Length: 375
Image (tube, rainbow, N blue to C red; front, side, top):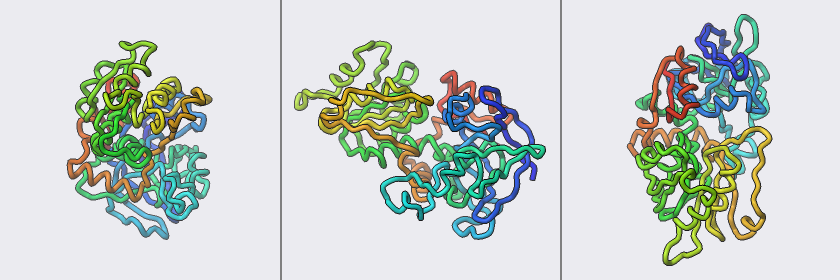
């Protein structure tokens, strides 16, 4: 079938909106009509050429929501008409990782997903006979896409596509890092580095669990109002503090009872390895945890003095907020519909597919929290 898609033919070049061909679902696969998709920094990371796993030509996009229009043989968990969110981190519930209950990083289709193809090793997308790669197993920059059954989360039908698509990545990544990875408890002190789309969701996750002190750190002074909107209690601009950022943050968290200072939890949402070190060293001696969410450039390495770790600080990574997609994503949609979390204010721009390159420009300029493409 012919579908409309924004194709990345080469790294560093604008996307081209055109007609491509999409083959229907095979065994264990689902055809989804994408109704809306967010434009995420991870899409830009790949488009820029900085992604070591980036493949071209490709249909990017991994933050979508839509409706099942057809299913292949053997599909039992969803049916035609179901509303779903594509999952770039699937949940097969059968692989050693899923069965371990220690991680959300399902390995069932990891190899083929990284190669830009479906589990059988082939692509469903093409243009004039030329193969197009799938992206993160999703490719939501097309108004129809094919996904493995284990990579779609069934959600309630009254949830608006142009809002809950954001749960496909940004919302879940931020809130999940708080709840699943760090397991932040009520009354905790936390520092969030980088107040973009992920950082703001970390902040509202911290508010949701009852954190007492929520410090936001960003070089953009305009982010102060955004952070406060979602529950931030203190704002720090590193440009105003200089090289003494870590001592400043540690001092900010001191109390009369605890003169050591440092946050119980810190979160890096920047992808900057220097900031990752600052986040770790701003943790409390003995028990502080620092969660790395941001994606660093290829070849980048993190470092700190071993003393920082020997004295009890912990470095952790978090992918997709530690969420098990088919199980947890529907719950987060429910939280949104029940008013427990906010999404609407973060959708700062909506536009048609034809304007998708403008969405990337807004993101690069820091003028958007999240742009959503509505089909």
